[in-house]
Length: 278
Image: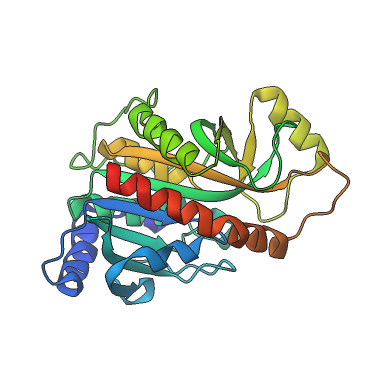
């Protein structure tokens, strides 16, 4: 069994103490996780402090294309924000415990709300590339889970409820703000697939039959850990391409990153408005 399953609360505290030393009294109240191609939103932060993951004790380092691999602490519309410019994925070889590790450190820093974004493939045939989807729920059929192993009671109870992972008030507010900016978000179910290969057309048909509207390789494990700690969560997927078999187009990672960048400016403006109204 992987040793990383056995992170202790002290391990998380050590990471949090290091970050406090770099933040120098700055106390973030919101965690924002930026997905593929969406890292440009980090430019919103005023008076920014940068903390590379590789400098933080016990942290894994992001290796995914388009992920800078650092925290950015700063102010957006009056809110103290800690952003992850780049995240960790199972397909990089990290365990669920390493993927979820930053979320638990954020909780120790006093953060109780999280915005999590990702680039996704559209499974719902009514979607199109460039759509923004508010995540209402997720489907995870893999065995990996950051809550497996000894429970850390300081974070949450052994058997946590997952009925309301995503905060309805946050979703409603985001939708109003987006519409005011000329974007009408979709709502849907996010299906987690481990990657790094894209799904086959047959798998996409199965995902659609199960109720999935978008598919991606991230997000779920961070949300499980955040829900376990009681965080309020807004989940947003950017539909950067249609999934395999929905169209005749072949898929590529470069396409996903470029599509994310195309909508990044508009989504950044929506996020800034949302954060200011939280």
